[in-house]
Image (cartoon, rainbow, N blue to C red; front, side, top):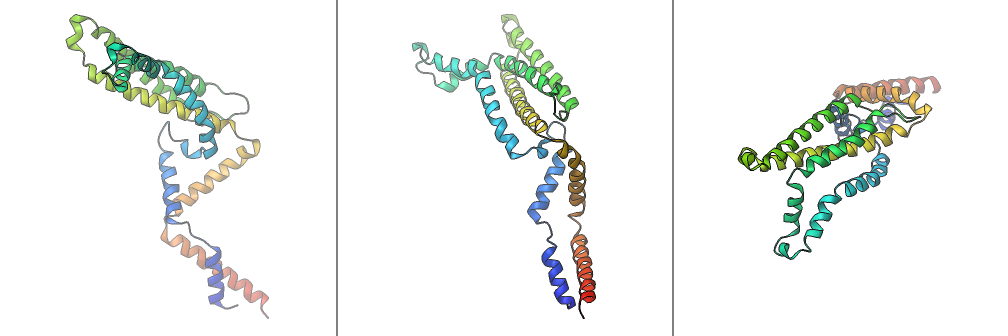
Length: 239
């Protein structure tokens, strides 16, 4: 076997990771540094698909007091000239989203705190608890401000537009946390003892590959080493 043939055979076997694969692996490793969303790269597509049904039903019924009320208000003659979005704004602009936020934090807290049998520990539990306390305190405090603003004497002291924007942003954060909580619980529930033993090795291999994938010399060195091994083995078998 010639050296050229050995080099060609080694290069065909040793396939360097593509640029898109390196970018995706680097993005996953970057996301893992952040709290709350750090476990997201470990979730599979099946975890997301299985979570969508529960998530959509939860949000549908959790927001029913807003969109159903706005729909019913359209049946009154006084609202003949109003459109649906204006009525929907009326049902959410008086602090209702703050109440919705606090109500959604309870299931998130329970899902992240409990550990059902045969499940892994919920990822980022401390970060979830801290964010839940922060969002709960903000929602409660802002809702108290909304109630205080209903007094005619304090009406000019309250910024209603800011409070509505804050309620919308906090509610979106809580909805995203609710979805992540469902996905994480699906992911931590689907595992076996064999997976528990293999996961540390897989994570180490993935981390090692991510660190050395961007090294321009690593692929050429691996190909050269394989070529030398194949060349040596070919000499041993060729008469």
